[in-house]
Amino acid sequence: MTDSTFAKLGLAERLLRALKDARYDTPTPIQRRAIPLLLDGYDLLGIAQTGTGKTAAFTLPLLQNLDADTAEEGIEAGPRETRALILAPTRELALQISESVETYGRHLSLRQAVIMGGVSQRPQIEALRRGVDILVATPGRLLDLVDQRHVDLSECDYLIIDEADRMLDMGFIRDVRKIAAMLPEERQTLLFSATMPAEIAKLAREILYEPERVEIAAKSVAVERIEQHVHHISRAAKCDRLIELLAAPELSKVIVFTRTKRGADRVARQLAKARIGAEALHGNKSQNARQRTLDRFRSGRLRVLVATDIAARGLDVDDVTHVVNYDLPNEPECYVHRIGRTARAGAAGSAISFCGRDELPHLRAIERLIKRSLTVVGEAPPADPAAKTRKPARRRPSSGGRKRRRRSRRPQRRAA
Ligand code: AMP
Image (cartoon, rainbow, N blue to C red; front, side, top):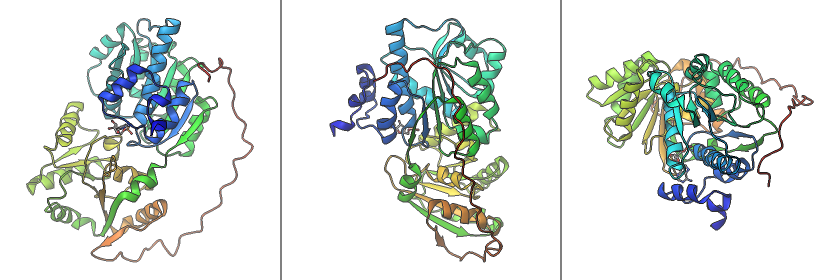
């Protein structure tokens, strides 16, 4: 087993000590593959979702590289500068990353700050005044503070973009491009995404320099361990069915996904009426309210969290017993993200989906993606109206022959 210990990956003693404190003894596959490459200074395209250990995979080498830059080259952040920037699509994810930086960097003396919308900017400006080593930020607030000249990215040597596909869904891609253009060209850049839509592949080609690619098939790993049921049911009957299901005590820590914020509020209200402890989590709530709800859910004081996809994205909550898809997502990858909230860290999990007649095409797309059929509970599905008219898939034109964009760059640092 010694081959897979963190020490073998080239991590420094002070980081190993922090990992020991956190009781991590074996690196996850993405950590095993990414850490040595990142310590060697390569750019990285990481295709991996939350739950794979990707945060430690990028945070550990970043901390080590920053520490070495200070020790070997005397590099320090000037006023309002940051030496590394980690971009996250949501406030929750930014906070989780910041906690990881704190945990893994506890024996180093690097300074970090978090900036995100939804809370007062004053303490964030204060934290930036003397400069920081690591800045974790959501794109919108970061651009605001750059415009107000509270942040200077011109000396930032490391850029990490987490959950790039979610950035795309949330309309942040232009902001991300704009931010990347503010950094020096000579830098180390990492981009992580659970899926690789064409727009993200394009962004990766633009901002990464000859990246190494690490892909972790969390999809098949997670999905196979999860029991997956589908109830064919009318929209009107969904709420009663959910309440019936929640009569079973084994549904003790449940995330219910709805398509809309209003839907989340409505379901949470109905459950509360039925005396089931439930709260909604979505982007219209204040940051403090979201954090409170999450803390209560994490600690087990709240049984049911009713969430939209964006709010739940990147949530790291242990021992979720069941995920309920109150509405089916129209992107099949999203189903995989959702059900990945259960069955974390090797545990078994259970996912229950409600499928209305109008959602049948979504169900078929999901089943095609995960290459298996969900187990039907109760009524059989109605005939799929789209089945007869579906056209055969068109073959994609080959994308071969595309020219690589090159840019000047200093030689790789710390090359092996
Ligand atoms: P992430 O994919 O970064 O969201 O990480 C998922 C969870 O796995 C987090 O709770 C981490 O603290 C945990 N984790 C990450 N790496 C390891 C490891 N090597 N051993 C044990 N737990 C880990």
